[in-house]
Length: 462
Length: 80
Picture 1 (spheres, one colour):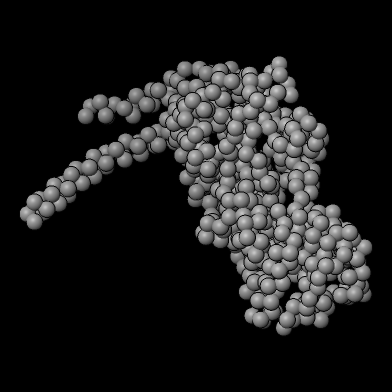
Picture 2 (cartoon, rainbow over the protein chains, first blue to last red):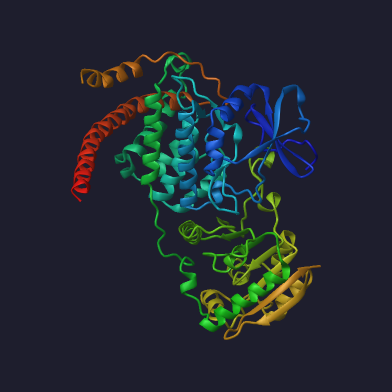
């Protein structure tokens, strides 16, 4: 990105914008936001939220602002190594982000401020500690007595509706966030949610009646009524409390899924599993990556071989249950450097939003040094008919290093995939893999996994 | 005590007669969302306030019980 060029997603809020200068991210704070910015700092809210790990820290800089006529300050936020999006989060990740937002709003009101937006995209899970953090320093405004919460609709669309749908209908409906970039329309959520959610006071009011009110007043001129109706601070606190209680009560327990219990259902002997771990660990030590992506990482057993060395690691999996389990394990054990995310590799997150630049595709955000594709290729090649050469081409576009495990047709896991379909994969073999990947990679090391029919490769991009 | 009893009434009056406030936010709160928010907030705000008063009311007894326990403990320690 060119120097001083605004980030494509940083255009809606006139309070300021993000830009890069020499690959460092800065934020210009505009003069129109001066009163709010000063209050954030002077009220002690900034210090409290940063010290409690809820708001990203920043330092003020002397960098000349890109738009000096409107500028108040230039700040340098703490840089994140990876940006993720709500449609890549599991249920508990979205729930924790929602509760963080409401907790911050409650604290802000204690300091005479209020959140002026509640976008789920303002929350990030830095891989280094995997806890949610608000990244938009300009989300706060001075609270005026009598004001409603201007971000109420956005909170319901970005958080409450998807959480309710995941909880009561199907967890895969989180993918609606990929279609509706400003959150799931409440009338749509209300029409998909089961009728019994109308007996849940929080969902009845914040989703069903909310959607009905949107429809009722959509075509009416209510400008005067809107300008004259106000609400007390106690009512506002009651509203936040109601949203918090409703969110807290939403629970989702993953049922046993195809891959959710994968690591309890493998054909590895203990000896083979141990040897596989040794091989992966040895490759990681050899590459010494700055960031690792574990594609098809399931519950993160092998991702942890990297993250436990202090290497920021993203464990991607298509299975929301596996990602949920991984996230809950990380929380329970207070692990760091590991971020689990939901991703369908056959349809990875694309560039979406305004100008197709607002929410970026996976490789447009950042790329790792090392990819791990362990027990993954047979799913792509056989279940999804992706030719080995195309898998190699895609992987090589993502990272210079690759650890890949190949499972031959004779293995029971591949036999299971071929049991219900015709074998149209004559090139699916060790030789076929080496030839296909040889177009893009040089094999640095390869070794058969003991007590199994599988082979591990370490490859470097040509 | 009469002062405490009148607080919920004051709160209700406060909710119904709050002064007009001009909104200057960059997000459109949406007409329907705005209206339903005020209605829901008025409803849950009363419950929220009453829960707060109830908590304070229970707190008084808890404080008294704690003071009695501390007194007993002090007496016990005195005896020892």
